[in-house]
Amino acid sequence: MPVHRPSDTYSPLYFLASLGAGGLTVTFFMYLMFWVPHTGRPVPLLSDILTIFETGPTTLKIAALIAMLGIASFAILNVALLVWNLRAYSAFRQTEAYNTLMQSNGQSATLAMPLAMAMTVNAMFIVGLVFVPGLWSVVEYLFPLAVLAFLGIGALALIQTSNFLGRALTHPEAFSIEGHNSFAQMMPAFALSMVAVGLAAPAAMSHTPAIVGLSLVASTFFAIAAVIYALFAAITGLNAMLTHGTAREAGPTLMVIIPIMTVLGILSLRQTHGLDGLGDGHTAASDTFLFLTRLLSIQLVFLGLGLVVLRRQKYFADFVFGSKTSPGSYALVCPGVALSVLIQFWVNKGLVGAGLLDKFSPTYWAITLIALALQAAMVTLVLRLNRQHFGRPKGHAAVPAE
Image (cartoon, rainbow, N blue to C red; front, side, top):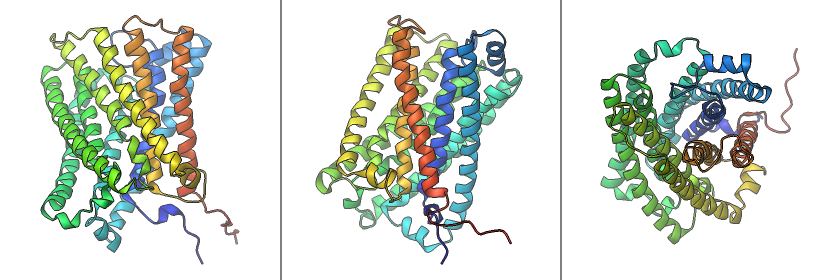
């Protein structure tokens, strides 16, 4: 009898595997964003990196090289997993399992598709900045294309969300409150927020007022939609969990608030930078520090909540280190990645920006080390989960060549 991999039984939650790889691409970009000088531009370019290789200190050269290798490796993995998912999802739609899914609470899992697609667009922009010579000279022509791409993905997310809500709100018997005992219904909010942060990027980098204005308006709409949906899903989900307990396989969703906070935080910083460019921004460094500290505090609260529940349910022992598998395990990657990224912003834009910490001081590196440790743990987790779900099953010997 053939031995199957867990990923052979498809679920839209496997889009989270692509999402996690894309998120790790961002964590490596943080090295360049905050350690490589890029005066006069909001982001580092290939030319800035080459300057470091020519004249920078050895430690920074090593960091830049690691960043480039990490970005390239996980961007490739991100795209490969997205393509695999799109093909698998297309085949999955022809099955009875898909029809069953679309009549259950699990319909919201389809929002993992636009979520992963939005992350890939963000990751590809990072790849362009880091590896394409002269990109900044044509970047103003790319911003309208990026806005159109994110609007298209956003439209898909809105359609999928409206289909789910339309069914759940008009046919309440088709939605199980008992099965709502997790934050799995946060997926639409996560997808909408990822679209929003992508739409906010031109506001922070473009010098064309029309593009900046469109970016601000569109990103604000999707951000507000994400916040409204998140509040709705969190309140109803918490009520169901207090009544029925937390669904074991959906336990990692308790920490989905962490990546949503990071995404919306970066969105706010991008919008503020865009307003500064228009001459209307007046945000002080101390305000940015307090804003990021509040977001980080929210993340730590939900991190603690999630870890308490997962530990009591012995989730890691079974689904990460044990023999059981669940595609929802990939949801564990997002909080670690998001916390790592926000700590980098908190240290550099918050503490250093407000004058509370000297850049590259021992304390600076001590805090940054936390972000790097989280990144390393998430790299290890992604590789572990990929072996579990996509690798050859244990005991399945390779067929010898004839």
